[in-house]
Structure formats: C-alpha cells, structure tokens
Length: 295
Length: 265
Image (cartoon, rainbow over all chains, first blue to last red; front, side, top):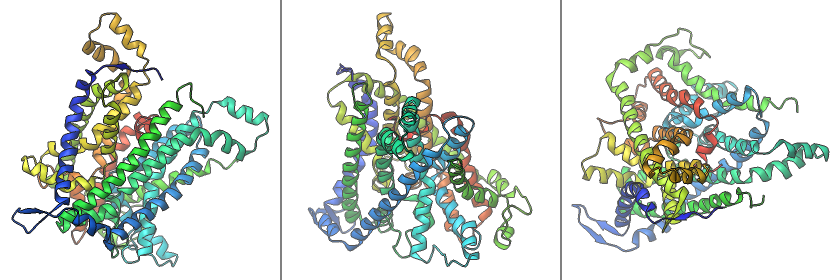
C-alpha cells in the first residue's frame, strides 16, 4: 500500500459527518448510560443506584433466555445460509443472459422493507389463506405458527433464509468471478477433481468475501427485530422473543428504563466486539488484496 | 454436472413464490381470499390498488416515506463525499479510530436507540417530522455511505489528483469537475444503498412519527393489528413497497455485492 499523505486539515472534510453521527449516536448513548445507573419513583426525580441494574440483568432469567434464543437463532441461520449460499454461487452461470437474470432475481428479497418481508411470510404461512400453510395442511401436516413454538421457529428461520441467503450468494459469486480462467485450465491439465478445484482454488479465493458475509450475517441476525415481530410478535409465549424484541418490550412497552438501559449497553458492547473483529478482517482484506500480499 | 442450472432455478423459484402469493392476493377481492383457495385470481380486480391511490391515509404514507428517504439520501451522499475523500487520500490524527467508530454505528442495533431517539427528538421539537427520521437514519446510512464511497475512491489512482493539482486546479474545482465524474457510478451505488436501507427500516421510523410523517410501513402494521383485516388492501400495499427497489435494482446489479460488503469486495 502506498503511504498516504499526512494532512491534518483533512479533519475539516470529515467534521460534518462526525458532527451528524455524533449527534445521532453519542447523545442517545449518553441518555442510555444515564438511565443505566439511576432509578426513579416518577416525577422525573432520579437517584444514583450504581451498577444495580447490571447486577439484576446478569442474574435475570429473562435476559439469559433471550440471549440464548438469539445465539441459537444466529447459529442456525449461519449454519444453513453459508453452505447453501456457497452451493448456489458455485452453480450460477458465469456468462450469458442468465447472469443478470440471476443477480436481479436473487437481490429482490434484499430490497423489500423488513416488515413487508414479515407480512409476506405471515400471509404465506397461514393455514386458511397462505400457500405454504394451506399446502402443508392439505398434506396432513399439523402446522400452525401462532400456537406451536416449533412451527414458529421454523417459519422465522425459513423466512430469514429466504430473506438473506442471497447476500451470501452475491458475495461468494463476486469472489468466484475474480478467479482467472487460467487457474481452471491449469487444474484441468493436472486432472484435478471437482472437489480439489473447490478446495484449493475456489475456497481460498472466496475466503475473504466469505468472512465478510459471515460477519455481516451474524451481526444483522443478532439485531433482528422487525421480521419476527411482524410474523410471531415474539410468541407463542416467549418462544421467538429475541434480544431486540425483548429490549423494545422492556423500554417502550413496559417503560422499564433502568433494566432496558443496562440491557442496551450490554447488547451494544457485544456488537462493538463483533464490529472490531469485522474491522480487523476488513483491514486485512485491504492489505492482502494489494499486489504484495499472498493468498 | 449437466443439471447444474437447476439449482439457481429452484432457488429463484423459492424466492419468487411468496412474492407471487402476495401479488396474487392483492388482485383478489376479500371474499375470494377468504372463501376460495386458488393459485390465481378468479375475478381479477384492481380495487385494492384503487383504495390505496384514493385514500389519503394510505397514499400519504408513501409520500412520507419518499420524503424522508430522499432527505436522507441527499444528506448522506453530500456529507459522505468529502469525508470519504479524506479517508481514502490522507492520513490524519485519529483517522483509523474514526473510521472504526463510524462502522460501529452502522452495526448498532436500532432497538438500542429507539427510546433515546424518541426522547431526543421530542425534546428538540422535531418529533413526527420528516427531518427527524432522515437524521435518525443517518446514524447507519452516513457511515455506510462513507465506507462504500471510500471503497470506490481508493480504486481511483492518485495520479489523477496529482496531475490536476499540477495543472493548477483548486481543490473544490478538481473535486467537482474531475473527481466526481470519475466516481459517478460509485455515487449512484451509494445513493441506491442509502435509499434502500432507509426504505426498509421500520423500527426507528415508526418510533419517531405519529401522524404527519408516518411511513407506509408503519401504516401497514397498524392494519395488521386491527381486527377484521382487509387482506387484499394489505397485500396491495405490500406489493407497492417492493416496486421502488425492483425498479432500480437493474442499474446496480453488478455492484450489489460491493454495496452489501460496505465497498470491500
């Protein structure tokens, strides 16, 4: 990488962005910090309680369960979406009229407002008017996502696969397209098997985009709110109440400020850690893709 | 591997099926939706769409969404341009930390910010205005715009800048006359992604509005929770929200991966 010119005046170019984002990020975050260490009896009178809210949170059964559900959800969708995404990217056409057709159709679910995604699946899965629910019922399968937790989970997971697998596909496809034809020709001369080509040519070329895809999917699934909220409302019972849904219930539904604020901060710290991993990976990607780097 | 093409075809079929079902429902009457189960409309009707285009409480939702999304795109791209240039060309005190801090805001869960935003914008009297939602969405769209633009700008050789300065261009003139035309496609892609992420977001938009700036997505959720649902109109409203993205997606099809990877592919 060519060394960048040192220029402190560049701060002036960044300043407007800094101010706007600080206004939207720092002030609200300070509000949260404030609430997390105080309690109130109403009338806007607050008093200092130190870390009580955090202590409550750490021992709170409700938080543990929401957190575990969240981890389980993120784990399941990663385990399905990543291999599926790679498989689809590998079978996509490399040239011809099929390429734009695939790209446009696959990107479509990514551009639908999240609550409409929820609405689509809410309708699609209904036993009385939905194609999926109706077909399953006709086949004699007992499926009702509003009453059966397993069915609710399946619906939310299939919905997420429908919504986001394309992201993995598109990123992997971009990685695959960067492989020069000469690599494949060399492999053919060596008589390499299909698996060897995948393992030693395609996977190494895809590993950077794949890392980006995995991190993005992990973080976005970790803060999923709208789609499951619209479909199941967090139910039946609490079975699909993920972290964000639980947090909004606490903060806006019950107006339980102290608990909500403590939970927000813990939540935010987890995301911060993930972002840091993401940033480190991204920076390494930048260095590796320069001519000097290996891979 | 002669059947290879089947995999994408099946996948696309799986993607389009639920969307087809929504469109199918939007072209039926409520009686038909609830009484007959059919794969296509028996009595084709456009009444559901007519309701949306004639009832102010419905179509104003689209106008509100369009207004705050447009404001957001303009703010994001305008301010992100010089910032992205600074990040891609210069090194300055705290640049790496700042770049990372911007990223954390793109990754921040909106649920954490919903309540504080509500209080912040209420206290400065901006609650239920388009500008409030536009500013709130800047939280994740400005960092996104900076990251994507930085990715595109770093692909432009530095020699272009240097030649222009040798030729006696001032910085603003160089930026507008030479640099911006060079990254025109990057700006288009950035605008598209800002548009998209502002358009699909619901939680903040819903929290910050009540009547005057209520987005279409929030109007839809209200209808969902009401008893005696008008399924046809709901489906029509949903189908219409898919339209803007579907219309412009063609132009960015080759850059989609780059945009989703925050300009890093």
